[in-house]
Amino acid sequence: MKVIIGYLSQTGNTEKVAEAIFGEIQAEKYIRQLGEIEGLEGYDLAFIGFPIHGFGPAKDAKEFLEKHSAGKNVALFITHAAPEDSEELQQWLDNCKAPAAGASLLGVFDCQGELAKEVADLMLNSGDSQLIAYAKDRPSTVGQPDAARLRRARVFAREVMQKYSASR
Image 1 (cartoon, rainbow, N blue to C red):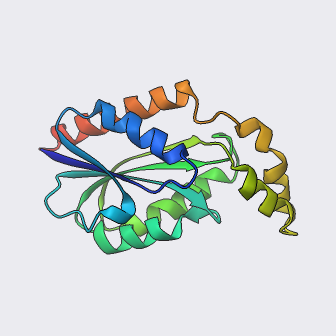
Image 2: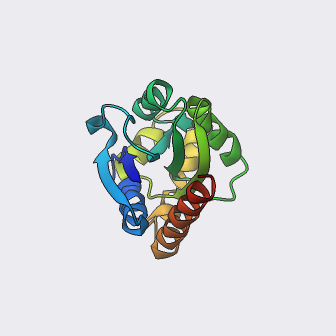
């Protein structure tokens, strides 16, 4: 079995989750930034991770999934600055799943990451009341993903591997 963990991370949040997942995989495995992966041919399973941007998947992740995920076994891991119980989050996660509609989606993990100060500053100056409100909540995101969220990511990796194995 051959597994790829591909991720897009601009501030380190998604990279931390990718590393936690990578550490749990008991198979031939590779970890790469998404831009370094030419496709998913030759892999039995792909964990693809990215942050939410603009209430959906980051542009490069969306394009990668649309181009490469059809017919593949895929698990998504997604970071965002919102608390996991946010009312709006489920719609954002649905938006993130849409580009992988042609894949066999074996699971979706999401967790809060730290909202970068530079991004929060841009949001504060955006003039958009919703973005300004999110930016003002930045202090609650500092230090995320924390150890508990990374433990959940490791559990997710094991569960996806079990699900994949059971389907063979």
